[in-house]
Image (cartoon, rainbow, N blue to C red; front, side, top):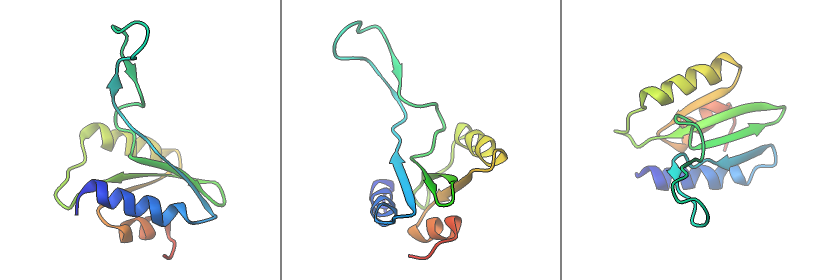
Length: 107
């Protein structure tokens, strides 16, 4: 399964729950269409997981979606470490079951 398909499955499954609010995060750099074309905008810090959210009762989570062979980059591991040290839940998801298990919820 591709990362894009898995991510969509996760977004659909969690997006239907009343106890979860979640956002898709695009990480990258781009140049504005209007204005100063030399200006580069960073959309989110490098290493930010694909999905960020909060679940009742106020637990923040991040989900990095990877295919079965996909590898977590060093900058992603650094984000995971910083996130978890502050009490956040970080899930390296290779399946929808990984997400359910990481959030300790049922489908």
